[in-house]
Image (cartoon, rainbow, N blue to C red; front, side, top):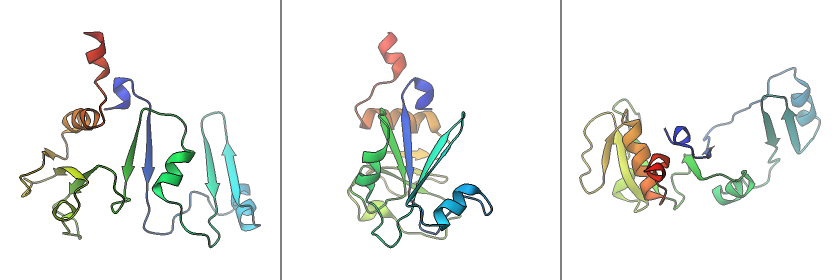
Length: 150
């Protein structure tokens, strides 16, 4: 909904578990297992850079943002303890009932699959993609590209 409006969007996702984008038996996996600190996978359709932490501290969100290519906006999932503006997502079926908005002043809105009990913040239905996109762009000081044409 944001990239479709002409903005260049990047995303960052924090994983709370071990993950691997490499598959067993690939050359890139063999390179990492052999000790390469970084492995770049490159094709005519996309490229990826894998960096092995190898016991060092996990990079901060800021350090990751510094490595991204230039863009208009970065949408971040996870990093819930970082001080950036957040939209708290709430799902009826979530095993975690923690309400981050109750204790985190950087939560600027709530998106939920049921009516949000929180009333001091803007609330959106999880499926209101256009409304959430409008809110994100306005919060970041970006205008809808269509607004520039009027």
